[in-house]
Length: 271
Image (tube, rainbow, N blue to C red):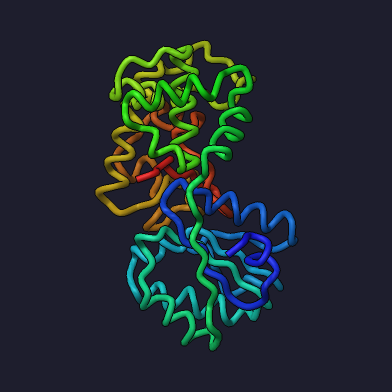
């Protein structure tokens, strides 16, 4: 289904894709272009009202349980939007859930799958991110480690392009590509923030590793930045045993990204 058709058709549309494929970017673009309200599924409330309701990250509530899925879908329906866009990771959305949305909303939902970037799109994204680098040289470097088949995923392309830039175009091993990608993400994301006295990058990576492990084992999706934002899916640092001034500094890196519609940060996950 072309993007234009997805955005103009009334009713209910469900956007499915693998992690990092660009679901959130697509929905954010739709909200800007069409003037709709974009929220994360976990933040849907009874008071949510909009002619166009864009609900991102439905997979977050899907992992909580079917009762939560029913509750969120009924709240979306009861807000009486004219059009609804939902997004979810493909692996968290079953055919039975499409049938459930049809039953609750009383209409046949459109289901759209995001396709991987073709080579021309990969080139344009790379040149946008690193205009001073050669895409052809980058592609050859990634190809020698048999990672080129992952470049259709925008998040992987960003990670590998960052690693390539970090290494000044000299990639030496498959493991090294991933190590450099993580080190590049662990930099302070705001260039105007001074790094004097800041924790070392390796310390931030170690803290992030611990945070990611605890979030993965607990089934949580991110970190809350205040008492009001804390819930079962977004614990505070102290709740997961990460007290002190150091660990929160990882939120200033690109290892985490802001959550939607609340004071939370989510881990940068593509798996």
